[in-house]
Length: 149
Image (cartoon, rainbow, N blue to C red; front, side):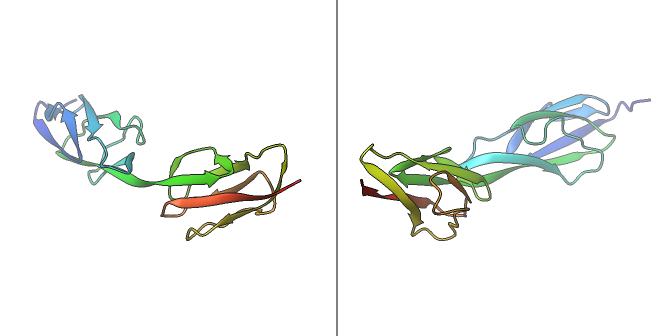
């Protein structure tokens, strides 16, 4: 049996609709727009009994438990990826994401290897035209080194 008491929802970095409600009601929470160079990542709650319908969606719902609730929207920084003589599967990424790269060369050029002066870039296989690396916590500048055939 549900209580008729109204409980409050406190949202850090977002809003809730409604802001007070009874146990068993559906609450919609929406994250604030991310700051520059950030993206929404996930929701957490320090309150027991809160299960998000989609923890990684910036707007989600949960069923109100029989007590006040606090939830927090979390954000991650994104970093830029610049590829000279090639392309990546993304132009920005969060630290820890797997990035795939491939050269884009003229028919007169032959791929040699990948280089980068950016901290934290380790290619899976720097000698392979199609390779990957794990995005570090900084902007990345990489290049496909080539020679003319």
